[in-house]
Length: 115
Image (cartoon, rainbow, N blue to C red; front, side, top):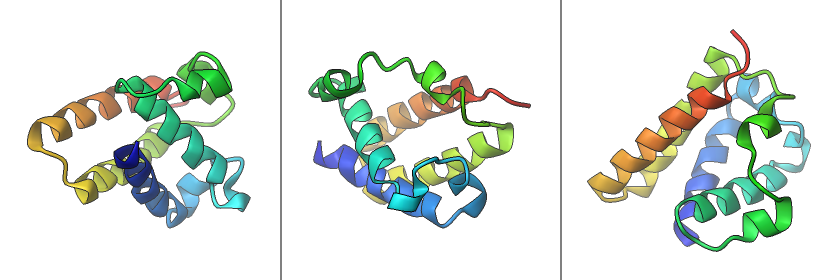
């Protein structure tokens, strides 16, 4: 869990410094606390950790949860830029980095809902 909490903290530090991407987040006024919590729990569960995300939020249904937010190719790319930087800051082993990047590239494109 500590790895994913660190990853998410690094990621959202980047988001907080990106006004265009930050505007997509509905709860950015509270320093993204809710988004940080949900993403850390989701990632931990996705990668085989505790099922706390499902207990708290139900099934992930990622695309449906992101439909209300305008995720354009630019927003997707900004999101990926910050996630890639967060992964690099955590310095996981090469094979872990590769798997994380593969997953996030796929997931970010899957969430895109605008041209």
